Length: 208
Image (cartoon, rainbow, N blue to C red; front, side, top):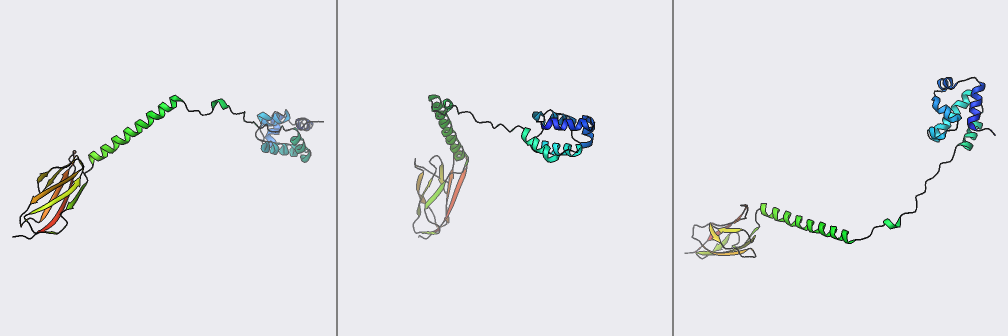
């Protein structure tokens, strides 16, 4: 039984067409025609393209198109599916002392970086400041007012330009002398980097 390549080659020879002339008439490259006749499938495009070539050549040479397609389906080799090899279980993940060391180093670097970043942000930011006493628009019936608040432990505090000691927990307090002309309590907290936070509290002195 003849193969698809033999059928097409014999039909071309009977019609006295050279590979070059058949290429010109069918617009199919000579190398493709030759590969089909020799059934050199590796030198050809995918099957749907080959099928189109065979139909075109068969139609031009005047041979049975259905028959040539059937021959092509019979002779065209099926695709060989590649099967994944058995996985190498020896390469499975395993925890090792070296990996423990590397993870430990990574954690330490991450913690140090986070701490340094936090300290840097804290250094360049204004200090936190909270004034608990006196309250806004508080009436003061004595010649002094109790000032109390909280700031960063490393900051320095001045109340109406008077230095105030700041405790380790950031708390500060002062019994501030005032006059009847004192209208506000001005609290200024200064960080180590020179950043300032300021709160002004209005007071109403009412004393003899």
